[in-house]
Image (cartoon, rainbow over all chains, first blue to last red; front, side, top):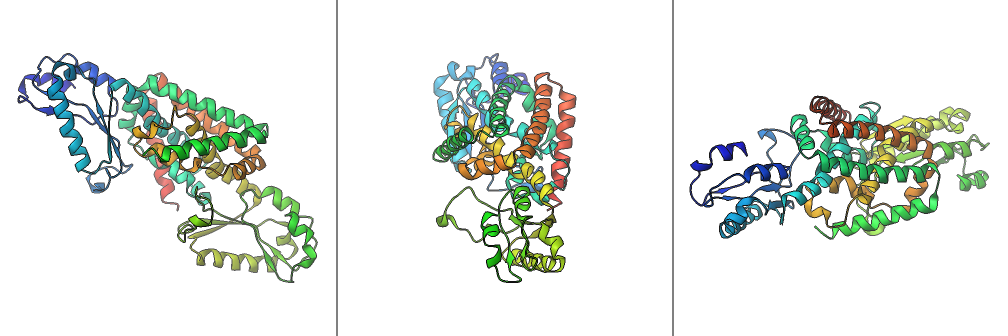
Length: 215
Length: 215
């Protein structure tokens, strides 16, 4: 955002500027000070990634079947709605062309709220689950579940520290909701409350299967 | 176990009896009342499975690269060590022949402690994470992490209720350790303690990568 603000006057007319950062409220706020109305700023978040770093791990199938989110509420959209709409359409086409299966438009606040759940919360959980392991020999007793849940814990520490901290209010709320449900399941298990536990797991299964149909 | 006890006298001499249940301490204890010394009971746990149920989802590659755990401490091993050893060897060969990549021998107590972590804890976390979702539309904002962490929540409710409850002491201990680490990360995020958070995530990454080398 600082770069765009600094170079505001250097962009060509009708230029389309986008980003791929994982937290949007702050960048959208910063950019609201821009004054040019003849350039389009469309923030975007490609929901794709890998725990592997660097060019050596480039993978042409990384975008396949993934979602690309575009943000519709930067000041620039209001300043020049027609240009903004055209730019968004072009970026959507580009996203689909490189393999994404679906594009979503939402605002920065909803984005940061939802992403704190689907992405950041999952990375925090995976990290805590790795910390909980007695030793690194534990995978000898694994059947795939532990490995699947903790793969994303091979985390880029500086990047994720920044993502967690710049969205910390939303993220902490989600962690607390998760802790409440986890604690409830723990209590049912501890009290051997078979009936409620089974009822809970039935509902979990139904809810998770419903998500599959929404891709 | 009840079936074996009831039919103890009906088994052929030198018969090998095994099981595939997910919790071992209780079954090992029950079987300690058997008196025949000429049959081999070797409890086993194939660490493979799928969230899909029924014969329609049979999959010939389900065992590939997985671990098969054998239990070495049932009373019968002591009663006739030679027969028990021979039977274990035969079952190990069978496990490798059908695709498992590794066999492990351990005792029932260690098995139940480790499995409570790698398998049951992961299923509880996945279930709580599904319960935490605001709605089933959330996957529109997913990049794969949430889907990966919650796939195992398409859980067979009666089976997992039984597994959770029959190993509840070990499982509750692991949930509490996990909650402690999760709460610690939450506090670092909440307090914006960048330095400690980044240090934690660095260690998580190192630890998780070390696990990859142990498969």
